[in-house]
Image 1 (cartoon, helix red, strand yellow):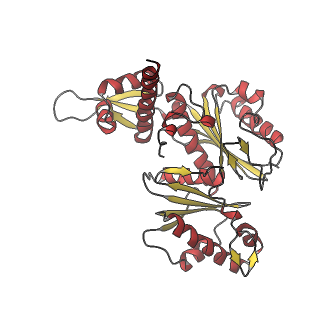
Image 2 (cartoon, one colour):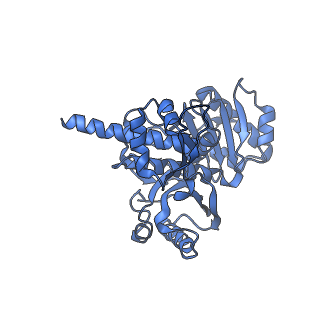
Image 3 (cartoon, rainbow, N blue to C red):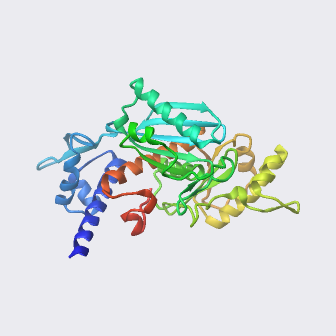
Length: 362
């Protein structure tokens, strides 16, 4: 009996996630269309959507019909909540507050020494409180904050950026922010992600990709890659997938990492260094797209001209430019919000039901 109750509860929450996530991506649909698209019964759709009416969802008009009763159109209210994304490099951070559909309301780049996590945490909290004091942000409306960091996120050990370039020590999911943040923003779910991974998620989401694979390369203080395979972010078992800066290719017989060799190479040599690694990435993952972001302006044209591309693989620069990583952080925050309202016991650190049964796609 307990198993059946648990299964029914899981199923209800999965259906809630599927419906809300689909509505979020589409923006507007009728209940009948939702039922058909998701192969769910109309009573199930009614049961899931009703609690959110006049808040997260609203009815505005009716669908066009050539006959019979016209169905009501349900709109997703993107402005009903706020989400945030932060990109952290060693000497600056970028903070963006947005609506649920990632329309920026506040954008600020702050020059700051981010190697001290306690100082950084206080600075971020103070910034958010300043926005609240100036009526730019209601603290109870902030639902999710994703922090994209330059460094490895080890979800198994719950450690954050203990490597180059931040080299934080003993920083975990639960101790980055203090009680001031939690008391001031009680509804906010905080998530940490590697910057290249966040970039990959944002680019994949913007392109409305589904089952394709995409590699996003980010050139900041270090060099990293975010890997999306068949719609899922691949992190590896210890969060180190895509850490291509640590690869040890052989350049002129030297046993040196890609990142180190790239950093001290002459400008004319940098393109060849990237081409060498990029060719391996293409052969390894066979993606449909490779996206460049960060400090790539001086490299991109030379790479395009010299790389012998495998058919059907395209190289593109992120159109988000300086906000490419934080845009990905916002995409993760939006997804986290949908999970949070769908799954009562959801906790990202320990997984949630759809991850157990195969994982959601972006």
